[in-house]
Length: 467
Image (cartoon, rainbow, N blue to C red; front, top):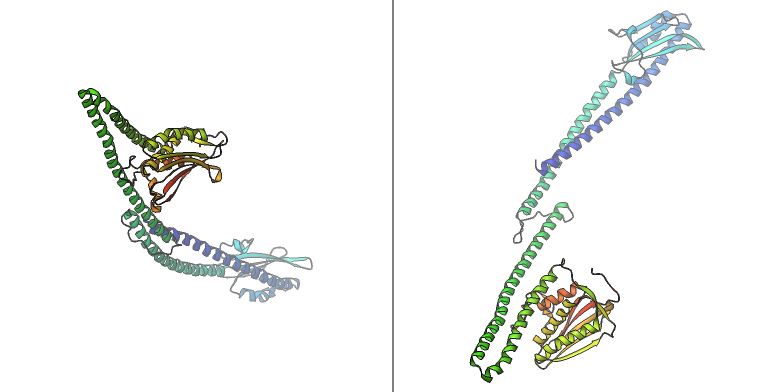
């Protein structure tokens, strides 16, 4: 049974039950009203007949009872009438053919009648003197007929209502079922490339909201597919660059080893003089390989939130002095002028993984070295920022970064120079490391005048637990 048929069956069952209850209630109400009416009329008839019977008994003219009570016997609703004197002897009786008057029993109420005759009795008392008893039988057939007629009328109206309701519900369910069928078909055929036709419906209706949800799902799938494709393309580019960049230092190391071998074989002072330059090339190649491997390991570490960082309180001035000592020589060896200044005012502390933060600063310095011309300045410093933060910055005098690229430089596997040395992971690592320390990275740049990249980190004034 499909959803449309199930909903239709449930709705019709509920409607049928409610209709039956309403008909039964109305019939019962009408029956009660008719019973009350019969009971009231029977009481009035009994009172009138009692007056006539008392008059005849007091005057001793019992023979006139038939004359006095004959009008009651002619009434259609009166089944029988019987009068007893005070000794209980019958003095008058009249009734319909086939009615055993003497076998009748008194009914407590007209609602208790089972055989269609309401039997009631009256004591014949006048001036505190008992003259006998009057028994009267009143027909309740009119009640049964009226109740049956009301039931037939109720059933006719109820069935007509149910038929009309069934037609209306089936039409509504047909329209809703058609839209639902389209939605089911769309749900089965939706993917990142295609979106099957959806029913046109009011956006506030259930079908309209489902259509909107399916459209949003299709849009999300399409965006996810595009994101996955971009990620896959970036990974392919990364592996191509990684193979290329790994091959370069390995080639240099191979050449260095060959040069060492030739120098040893040649002997003499010339071979010894070449060993210094050969050693420099070897060290540079090894450092380059080491930097690439560290970038890969650090990115993998920061990508997993389950791997905890070794966070602790770090004295900012001491940390900056270590960075100055470690990176100044590399910048100057590359032919750049090194400038260091601590504008934080002293006494500042930060909270984090010291090794990762030092690697972050080192990546910023190496990035500045790469894009700063020989002889230009590279400035490492720190200052107090807004919101109680400490900003560690690296400023260069390079060509600057176009505004449209200032977000893209922090994406993984993205490079903007043919001689890039870190396969597009250095600045991506910087951003991830800053975020894992509840910080942020900011870029300010002027084309042709240089770039400043600042890392804003929360300052730490007391011992903190790793979050």
